[in-house]
Amino acid sequence: MDQPWWKRCVAYQIYPRSFCDSNGDGVGDLRGITSKLDYLASLGIGMVWLCPVYASPNDDNGYDISDYEAIQPDFGTQEDWIALRDGLHARGIRLVMDLVANHSSDEHTWFVESRTTKDSDKRDWYIWRPPAADGGPPNDWQSVFGGPAWEYDAATGEYYLHLFSKKQPDLNWESTAFRTELFAMMRRWVALGIDGFRMDVINLISKPDGLGAGGNEGGMDRALNGPRMRDYLAEMRREVFAGTDLVTIGETPGMPLELAREITDERAPLLDMQFHFEHVDLDHAPGASKWDSTPMTMPALRATLSRWQDGMEPHGWNSLYLGNHDQPRAVSRYGDDGRYRRESATLLMTLLLTLKGTPFIYQGDEIGMANVAFDSIADYRDIETLNAWRWLTGTRGLDTASALAMIRKKSRDNARTPMQWSAAPNAGFCAAAPWIAPNPDYTGHNVAAAEADPDSVLHYTRRLIALRQGTPALHSGRYRLLDAEHPALWLYERTSEKGRCVVALNFSDTTQPLPPALAELPCLMTNHHNPAADTLAAWEARILGPA
Image (cartoon, rainbow, N blue to C red; front, side, top):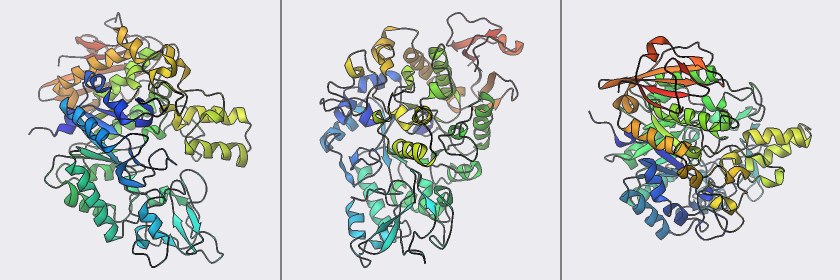
């Protein structure tokens, strides 16, 4: 049986605000993206995931939507969006829109109407609760971005729930009227020719029963994978996606493997694939905040991703990623962004593109973009980062140097600095001062320089995508870990009815012996200039055949 299109392609994630500015206002936009379509096509990708471009007051950079069917003026017009859609489709690239349906902006007309009176016909489109007996919040849930997850509204004397910013009130999926309007809105986007949705924190949409009844310490963790989540997803699939070949991609933090396998089961899917978070949480100190780090180790990463590779068999499907708009840069987190930047960036790209699932390349990872070390908190823009700064220097009492070191390592702004197109001012992203400063290393690490260097991460990525697309074992073969104990080497095979490949990755800065049985296999591709048959050099990646 032929695979669905989304199982065969490589995806590319675009964060519009930081990709390319066409009009010189310092903010990336739709025309800027359209101007780079030939570049995207040259990579060999088959799908673009476009982060939100809807109308928004930008409290959370577009993930607070005030109108789901209007384009944010910073990004352009509906005509600009249509030109982007048509340009992608003309190049054989599908367009997936970001859907944020757990919450809206507090400036959305739905919420404006909801808060006018308790009798509003949209009152139950959001989650309102009366104060606790002491007059305080209904329970002690905390927001992901810090502080209470409840905001008091004096006009009606009740609290509304916001698991994220107070300007992002949670929508109430228990309201039939709300779901009806949401699904109608989604169908209108489908009619405009999109190819699917990536759904933001979609496993938060069903809140637990008894919400607001007494103490209930937690927040997002208490709302994960709620009691009616399956019902809502099944209804969405019937109402929006039945009879189409659109792809549905869920962002599902805190979803257990067994549940992920169930909801992506190809025999009766609720979602086609999902993003889990286990591997990006490995460097969070146990029992502490995300800002308290513990070392990231290859054995832990190998064990986690191998468990998901095996656990999604035979009917589930993984979305594969190492970086995105909410995470630090992959080469800084999992690799070596100093001496072995090129080698570790290409090794990580090899890992991403040779696991089973649909790989998502985050913009800039194809040239090895790294974390930024801003000199001052004044250079950061992300709401989560700024809230964390106040908490770290205030509540926790850390000195500014210690707090800044923590921010530099984990801030979402690491992924949001402008795309580095050239060594021209502002990384060739824009003519005016950009909304956030570029990483100063852009003068040496940029697309123009990568295009001129045949050994660059960019050219390697293109060759790797082509190899994956032309090798059945790499895009559809089953994964099998070959050595679960090696401290430095990650060795695995991908096997299909049409062939077998072995992937050998050296996650260290020292040469490692290659097992003799593997040394005898022909090399299909390597990131090393002069590979030795029986060893792997520092941060060497090698794909072995036959294909």
